[in-house]
Length: 396
Figure 1 (cartoon, one colour):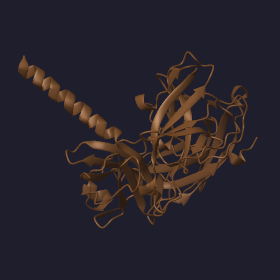
Figure 2 (figure 1 turned 60 degrees about the horizontal axis):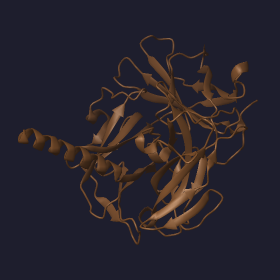
Figure 3 (figure 1 turned 120 degrees about the vertical axis):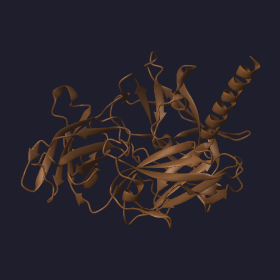
């Protein structure tokens, strides 16, 4: 009995220590070389900067890997040597202690390409960071482009009467001179996603029309959703139109004003779900404070306890840490976030899907469409064409 109890205790200790380590990892970003623009799509001339914090004052050994995936984010059949020139599984050697902050943390940074490897093939990739025990502490998706052509996206209001007020319709025009849509041996997949969320996308297998030098994918429908809410606590002690109150106890507490889901469309400038680490110091990566940010939502949908707060800051994850709880007439959640400018949304989660609490055809959304090709003489999906557009110029 003692042996069983000791084994059970050991399992509990390992479980909680591994989970607590994951909870200490914050502010994961893929950004450009200036640490200014958060991105998920990079071309071969760009550097991918990966940054994250661990809420501790002791440095640790972390390693990163890169894997190649197909259009639907299944691990591809390529060997590492086929998509990487060099080798990965590299220890992260660039790390910096936070300076003059109440919450101590270590800021880790690495870049791709680096002296050990560079990426050779276009496609979907995932960065995986693990500790010295081989446990992955986080993973992030990105898309890598090489020698792609440019397509276009036309965005309009839905033509269906029941969805005219809520949906947006896309028409994707693909220019690809060396594509072979008439051959059964070539496989083409079009992926379309909204607002840099790589977890929520549509897969279109066949074009609507085939022309001599182009193909057209029509009637791709997305719910309009709402504009992102936002707050800016780059001046950590200041209140503003979004921030109701700031307190300093053992750490900072930033209480936001209560959010209300709009019943009519209201334009609100946003950055479509991204977040920016910033303050008034020289190095925001290591001189920014962390604050417990209190989010509050007032809604008549009191019977639904499956409301979640999402954005790029938490990789759009609808889990226990992002779930709102009903208290004193409001749905609330508190998240520990680094100083900066944040976009966020509220989602309802059911068994089949996640959806917003309101939809408007006028909502400004950023759309991306990517055409993937698999040739009979190749064992992976490469990217042939990319198209982007913003619904700020939507056609009624």
